[in-house]
Length: 63
Image 1 (spheres, rainbow, N blue to C red):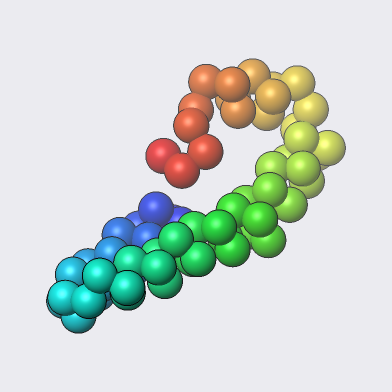
Image 2: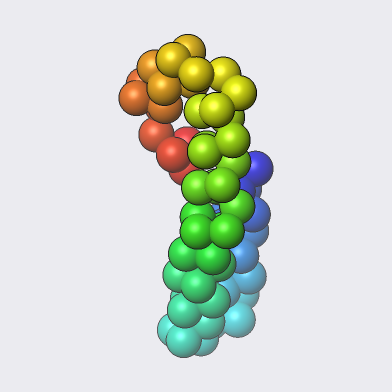
């Protein structure tokens, strides 16, 4: 889901044709990682334990 949103934002940056608009994409990725993905991962690790830890090792964060 987050990758899809980032790709949509990237498409909008291309549409704007402004190199500085890519900064919005970088800020979005940093914000989502810090305030959404990392807390979700901590919660899933508490709830699911070792099975989530193994899954996390096998699957990349943004894919």
